[in-house]
Amino acid sequence: MRLWSPVLVVLVLVLVLVRAKADDGFVSTRGQQLILNGSPFYANGFNAYWVMYFGSDPSQRNKVSSAFEEAVKHGLSIGRTWAFSDGGDSPLQYSPGSYNEKMFQGLDFAVSEARKYGIKLILSLVNNYENMGGKKQYVEWARSQGQSISSDDDFFSNPVVKGLYKNHIKSILTRINSFTGVAYKDDPTIMAWELMNEPRCPSDPSGNTIQAWIREMGSYLKSIDGKHLLEAGLEGFYGQSRNQGNPNFQVGTDFIANNQIPEIDFATVHSYPDQWLTGSTNQNQLSFLNTWLNEHIQDAQNILHKPVLFAEFGKSTKNSASDQRDQLYNAVYSAVYSSARGGGAAVGGLFWQLLVEGMDSFRDGYEVILSENLSTANLISQESRRLIRIRKMYARLRNIEKLKRAKEIGRAEWKEALKGGNNNSPGN
Image 1 (tube, rainbow, N blue to C red):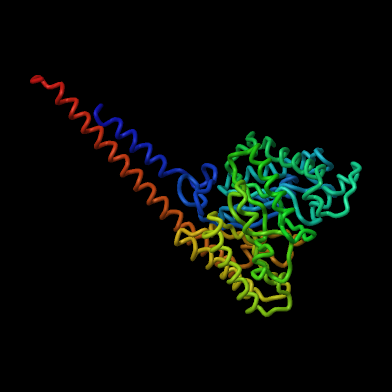
Image 2: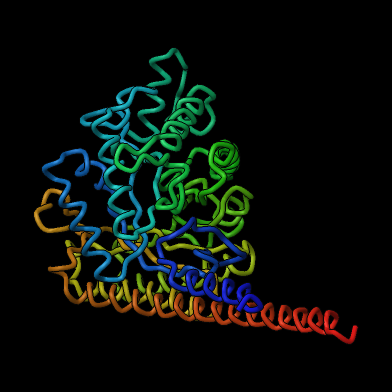
């Protein structure tokens, strides 16, 4: 028995690793794939920007729990939400560096519940738009400190504004969760940080301003937290050299150059043809979408050599039938699955947005309530099952390799033991 004990130890360790839960560990990257527990991580997901707000009110926290529970029932394992609310009513950040502890506890609760349900989170750190403060609020704070600022786009270049934003990055990353006792920067529940929701700088269509800002903020964030992934929050618009792939406008970002920055771990793409191609037929919007999806997947694989996540997509049912929304979901999911099953760069899609019953004031036409929107819910579940099958396939292959290595170690130890036994025989 002493002879085989090292082998048995190795095999037991392998079996323990086989049983590791899918929500353990930090998500990392390897080439064009996300990696979790050593295996490629392809996952379906959702947006729920509101969870911090509801988590801040103990009487409303059940909505956060219900949303995560419904998500898991439908196989969703990535959630994207806001880690910002700057100025205004019920903010997270009252003023630069002054935080609302009640709202911070709401974010704490959301992170702790995600951990409980095995959901990985992407936390966005500031908004491009005025909703919940955004870059406009930071600019106003800097003006109140005596800065002469002419445009909200100075958010990306004014040193005082950049300092205020860096302070917010540090405050979020170093926050100790009041429910779990774990610092955000040490919590594997968080899959990734997002520098900004949909950064745009139309005053500089060259993209140089956004490029410099992403590089500076990415480097600063990674100096505090080297464990988590980072993405920029881009919609996927190309720079001036490739603008034929864009809708008919330029926003000062460059999908290729911005995502080539070393600190950016994976690319993101948003997809709203109903907003970008207003007045177009549903068929024309779908045609644009299919090209948009495939171009970004190919560019992520062949140029960026990084994963790409379709971090927002949707179609409003205020102006179109639900079957048209289902067609859009099916297009996104088909593109992701087609790429993923071949080990490609598309790692998942996050629809906008997940709500639960009793949230009528948050309806924006894009909402999905899984218990009500049954045809859409079925599409979501189908995509989840397909991506889970791919993950399980990779996990099985990895475990087969582990067992093969364990057996090789066992055979080598057996040969060494026999050799040692022969050397110690009475005839020697």
